Length: 481
Image (cartoon, rainbow, N blue to C red; front, top):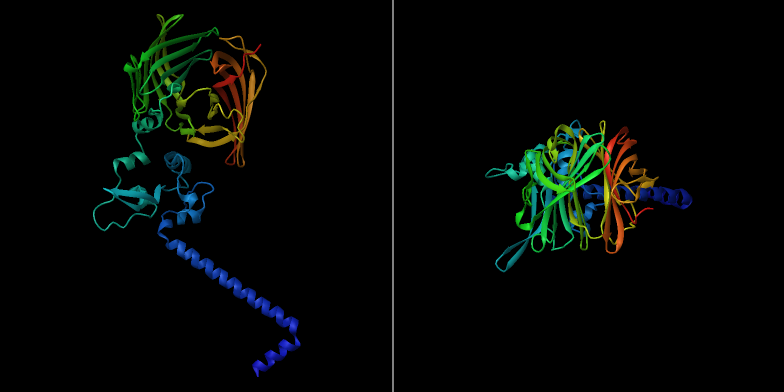
């Protein structure tokens, strides 16, 4: 009877029957899709390459999860740049202490090759920091023996001051001998509102084999506006640098870092006599910027800022006139790379509560580069708050520079952004020092500027406004009038 009624209904109410059949088919199809998705999610949850602890997994922007899981091209060199800085400061630092209980860095089953004699076997290897893996609920089930943090694990997660600054500030060797290679410790000191010093401990040349050596360069801006320059050289036989330490010896001139305090000693000569420095520089432990390195063909440029905000104490002497310093504002960075025909934009500022750092290099083959080649970092008492990008700096006006018959800019502005965050920096230049340079037949002028900045914007839902003073550097392509 039921079958007869169903057949007669189909014959009499054909349109209604087709609609009912289509709805039924759609429902069955949706159910099949949901069951397939659920089965795929269950399979991935059981996949050994995706198992981990914690509640959030941090991956690089743009990574393809499926390719990473199956070993596709986008997963071959999977990694997070500056992972130590991300672990210690951005995620695991005091800024997120109320939101993040623990951060566990992990290497998940990377492809390695194990060789013994003539036999090479592909293997999968992973790594964790035991205490951190346990803190996020991903500790290994150790059936025999122990699994605990090694000294290297502890230094990776929470280094001592000595370990941190040696890690940030160690020296490098060039990939190949290059006469344009240079690496240096740079310090600046604000001794008084109208007096400041630049101190550079430089190693340059074909390090470590070939013609190379070191220099101590000191520039003093006097209260009367004049600039005094001093220098001394050290042959390679008197240079000691360390690829694991921040320490540097240039003859009798030294930089020694112990427990986060830099001891500077040096003596140089110039037209106005001799200068000597004996200083202790103490960086703020939260306000540093991690190492960044740009490599492209034979071009290499590296940069790190161990002391975005620091203070200096000690003595500086010119001839027989000495001055005692006690906690004056200071700054320290470290550069390395090949510098043939390279120019840059750079600046740092110290405000009431915020610090700013901006910059970027131009290699000879990319003087006009698309996109946003420069970065701007804003830091507060908890460390780096945000890193933004910008395309150009707008220079305006004219200010007569010392050292060469050129005009420096009287003011400039830049606007940087990242997603919804925007920061604007405006600088009024108060002093400029010009150094002519001749590179490959192109006449350029290197400008070192001192100015007052104003910063405003919005970062991470927070309105920013601050002002202060800073040091800035740029290049002129040709001498001014």
